[in-house]
Image (cartoon, rainbow, N blue to C red; front, side, top):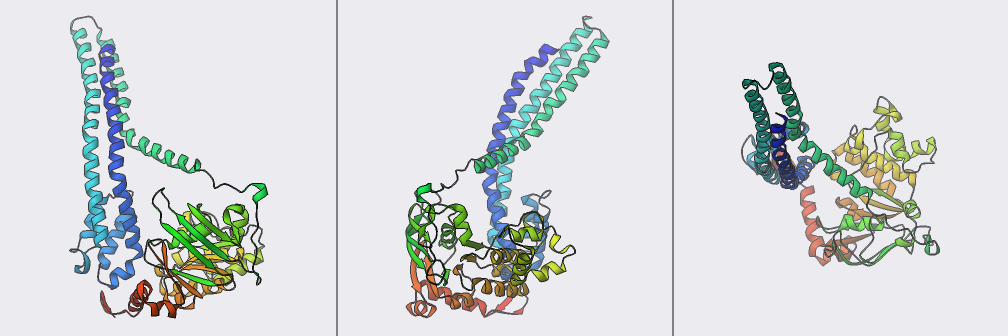
Length: 469
């Protein structure tokens, strides 16, 4: 019986290897579709106000999609798609948002293809395991009937064969989670193994040089940059941001606005050219020295799973309690803290999950107030907030901008008008630089952008899902 079971083992192992390859293929098929779906769901959640105002989606459909996403641990893409498409077609007919529906459909198709790729290997594996059991029991029964095997011994061996085969058969159920663990470990290792940006040699270490009024000038000299070699997203950009001035960066999505601000903070080194802060190449500044000169308030605020106070104190670790409270007051965070049952000791959850978007933004602004750095990189976030939160965050950002060198990725018309200078970016290159009046008179991309934004700001809701311009 043991020999019969061993004879089936090579085939079982080969089928297991086939199954592992099939699971890797399944993951490759479904991963791209899942990432696209995740991005579309995030866009869908952020664009609710606009989509409903334009009649592109109904509130009932939004709720169904939200329910599906909220229970994503047990609901697959097909179930979310079913909920999203309930109520009709796409667009103004009351169905879901067209890009989301396309992503859901693609995810559903990819899931089917992935299952088809894995199915034959799984069936073959289980078939070989069961074949080994049947062969062993058949040999044992033959020996039993021939008198060569005692009944008690046969029963004992049969139980041993079955007990041995059970865990072998269960291996198929662990292939998926083990592969997911391998992928997760590979991603973690890729992050841990990522090379750090080089620190300057001791003889090259420089310090930012303030201007006459105490501010810091920021400049880019023929800067080119690409995330992937050979595919530049910033093309030969030369700009100067005077000390204590506000410069608004405007342009279509994908024009390089966010990348430009992050190059100033040296998230990456440029492919060619030079980024200077305080007259010094950022590559000649120690990372700690550069970070002391720059504060950042971006759209995606990450909060650590600790208290509100500790998250604010990240701005300056040696700040006193009084300084933390003062920064929170200026950011409008104090009124939020007063409403919370545990006040400053409130745990914000992973990523700040227990706070609203506006509250997370106020924490980020309080950090910047506490840090009090001369350069501020700001990505306006009010497009994703309700009216009350938007007003509070806007006031805090306006105060935060006073007396600093500000690079703001601008979405609101009032911010653009107040800027000392406006830079228009298109496809990673500077199209125009000037004041609002100069750029509007010149026409081009800026005038189109301004007219489109002005038209949107004049919308009024006169009925369910019907905008009035």
